[in-house]
Length: 138
Image (tube, helix red, strand yellow):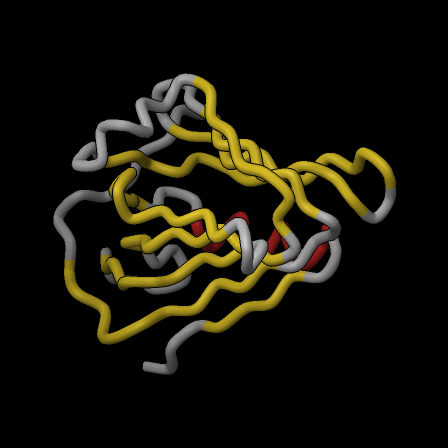
């Protein structure tokens, strides 16, 4: 199987990445905001919605041109805690700049202020089977 690698430079590209990371799990301690490098990265276990089999794969999600990162309803000091991604959206403030909202299960949000949409999602390694299949109401 080919590893997925997606680049987003506009909102339609971002929608593809958002759908690919829905139901991804990450550990709070596996996030990194590099102020000097102006990037924010997450190490994910991505649920592979694009396959017929229930599988997960390790992936990296990187936001570039990042100005600041903040969170609401997420205990960022609990580095061993796991969080599930429900969605990702971008709201323009002063085009092309804006804020990404990484929406998490339980009502938490990570807000990433950035100069523009510049996001990369890249799978790493081989998929592994999972017995935990995400379920959504509706």
